[in-house]
Length: 171
Image (tube, rainbow, N blue to C red; front, side, top):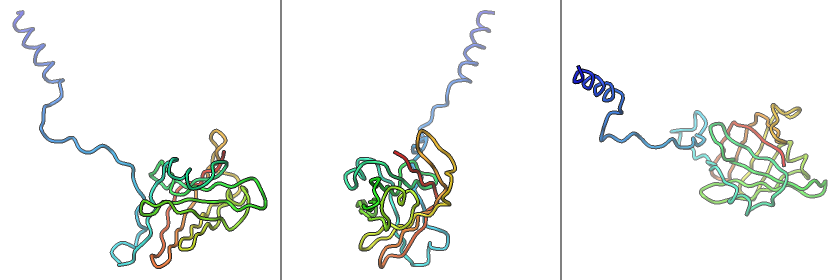
């Protein structure tokens, strides 16, 4: 009887233990990067591709402070960050990352309210346009406001690309 109980207990434990295998389980989940819009793949047209940035990258390019960030769907790190002083005389600055290089952009308006409204940020060869519905934000979390938005990037001699996501503004 004891032998039967031991055999049953051993078979239950063996059935619950994970199977041993030499096959790899698979790579860890990676952050999803934005993809080119439909219709641009395979047509021979090159599109500028933005890369997500972390704080240490963009904080060296633009001043810290109140501002906004664009986060593409499926990402957690921003593709675009902008800050501006609360002044009606000084234009905001933005930053993007292309080909592992941070590019600084200047807003076409002045002050923090203009940066929050979106609009055009540009350098000599790159133009980024942030468009959102404006008005009341879709949500608020800890002093940060969110709007569904699109980001369009145009780069001289390279073409353009568009991303969908959220535009987040706050301190």
